[in-house]
Length: 157
Image (cartoon, rainbow, N blue to C red; front, side, top):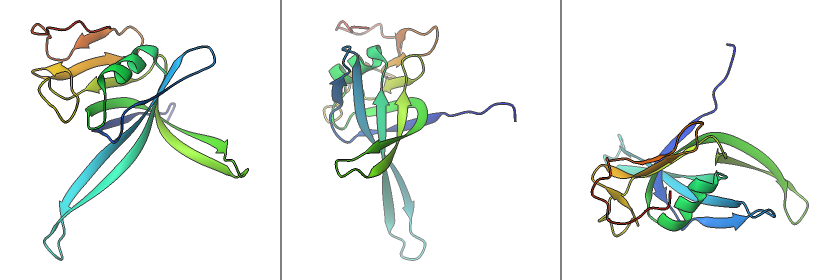
């Protein structure tokens, strides 16, 4: 095979509010903790079982960071598209550790809010067909996912 693909797509709920930090030059970095769940029926007992996986997501794109900071909160349902990256770091005791994260780079990644406007528990912001979508790909801008003609508020993107 001549090339390779590193692409991760997640649809899940935020386990906590977005954590916003800034680099020395003032660029924002947002960390998200996204939960995805799998449910099945246990063949032996007939009970319904569930397993939840937690995913670390890091956003470096300034526009996506603003959206995450202003409109996402714990419980929000999101669609995230990025790349898998593993980084090495040293803890306070000097032990080397590894962390694998889904990364949305400055020019490559997507964040879509899936909650509707009336969802109280998810902190959503959106129209009839979902939420707002922003892509950090090459020529993309932003567009409301559902046409967006019935929006009352101004959105800063």
